[in-house]
Length: 310
Image (tube, rainbow, N blue to C red; front, side, top):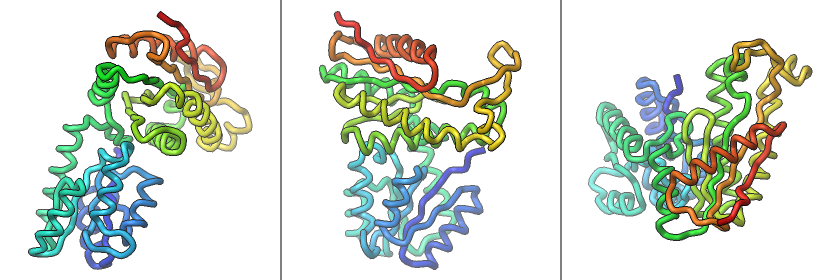
């Protein structure tokens, strides 16, 4: 069972202790930071399901942290609860204007904190159909994003990303290790897009080991190349030393036969409207499935681009 991860940020250690004890008693995984800048550094390395931040802090205040996150297309879906002092109306206004989803006045009752946390997480999951494992937007958001770019006559490339041999890995190493692979893959996608993509790129999680990146045609090659490079570099560390030495695992294939299964690889099919007109999102998914299917027939990690024209 994956525990919801919450990042708490406050320069007051007593407040951090209260938040940590209260939230952990409800089954949440809690990460701590002491100012906005430390929180930002943590968020770049992991993906919390919720941020609870104080308003007034050294180095970077809560409203500035909130503003930075809400302007980042990869992080803007993360819900934020702002902690403000009693009666400090201007802090509440600044926090809401910066993009905070809710606020709690200090000192607060633990019961109220838990209720607001559950409400914000529930509302975010409903509004964004976020994948519970990776927190990336799901199918509804993906479809809307593609159709929106079609409607605006924008040039785009959609990268359909799928892991090869994932079922065999899951069967051999268990669901927890499988979830780790999914989360690490999501982190690779986020980091590569942040480094090589544009601020308008979109990352979605279709489900299981299937992901989508929506970018511009000129960025698709560099994104795919770096995703493959970073994924292949990660893969050996996922296996036991014994399996690493062999270079394969013994597992059942889809016909339930024991076989030597190669290590995990990644296949990407890239659909673009650069050379052919696309009128509906269904066309994109159909072409993407064909291209990804072809990429999966190739050995190791690969990406295949749509080269047909009208």
